[in-house]
Length: 194
Image (cartoon, rainbow, N blue to C red):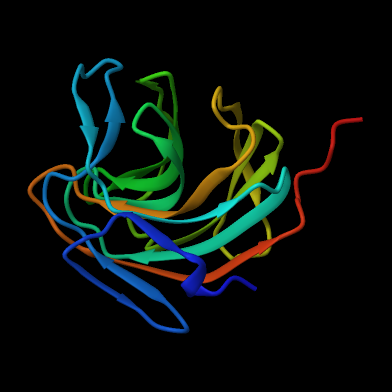
């Protein structure tokens, strides 16, 4: 079981709370992680709380709970290596009807975004990030038991020592409280291809 004392801030928010059971982050307006693609802008100011490992094979699971209300509000799992190399997975609020469950992979300063629409009434989600050397699998679950694949990806700088953990941000003029519970690091749940 992961202890929250293993985590270190890359960027700390102004307001947060860490207890033995949960982590809460209050997002600040105009915070985000995105690099260049399509929009042209570079945003690199979201709070990121991570642990470090050299383990080549592991899985990291966390439950997120949130009450987002403004477009692009998000919280989820992250592997932030530096401003040009990282990945994240989250639900991004869109409107009262739907939000987007998706992931972003950024290699050499260019981000992509793969997503699909889900109901805006969903206010919690589990994520599982698994590593097999420089390759990664991101999964999601609505109950913490049955996980479904979101994507498999490669990080160009994803070998050796890496950092991974959680993040939350509000790209527009917004703020909400993101809660993270049930964090666990253990053996890789992403089976080898045979």
